[in-house]
Length: 106
Image (tube, rainbow, N blue to C red):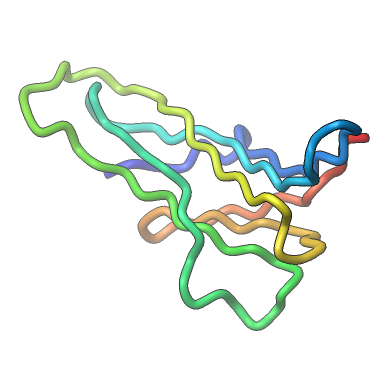
């Protein structure tokens, strides 16, 4: 089972000139073996507060043999343009969740 590495998660709105406005969320998951794949996916249904984006971290075990070593894998979510002016993002993975504030780059 994959776990959130909570202090690795960041979320920001990219307002840099010359490119479309977008929301970016990045982080890492810890897995019990090598070879896992993962992604962040828009959660359906969203919660009651439209300012808080809910995402699910979906991790897939390797299909064949894998090294018995704890691994970290990067996950990323982008939304162009952001559907809301989000203040927070909550990421769920199994029974755990983590919320981060949304920053802004100019």
